[in-house]
Length: 140
Image (tube, rainbow, N blue to C red; front, side, top):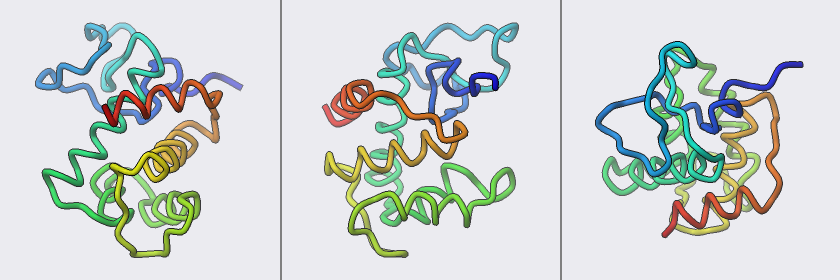
C-alpha cells in the first residue's frame, strides 16, 4: 500500500496551499511534486498548521461544534461530511453529537487532530511524540 499524500507531504490535514499563508516549516510550492496541497518540512509543522487552522475556525469564524468545523474543513462538495463528522465526534472523549468543543483544550485539540489525520490518511497513525509536539506548537 502506498503512503497517503498527506503523510508524504508532512501535511496530514491535507491543507490546501495558499500563498497568503506563511506557515512555519512550509516548503516552497513545487507543482512537479504537489499541485494542490501545502508541503511541510516535518510532520510536527504540518500538525501545527492543522491545529492553528482549527483554532482560527473557532476564534475568527465562531465555529463551535465538530459539525461546523468539519463542514468548513471538508466541504460536502468533495467529502462525505456527515461520515467525517461522526468519525471525529466518536474520537473526542466526552463529546456528544452537536455539542460545542473547545479546541484550545490540549485534550480536545489532540483528539481532534488525531481524528482528522486518521480520516484524511487511511487510518495512518503517527507516534505519540510527533502528535504531542505538533499539538504543543499549535497551542503555543
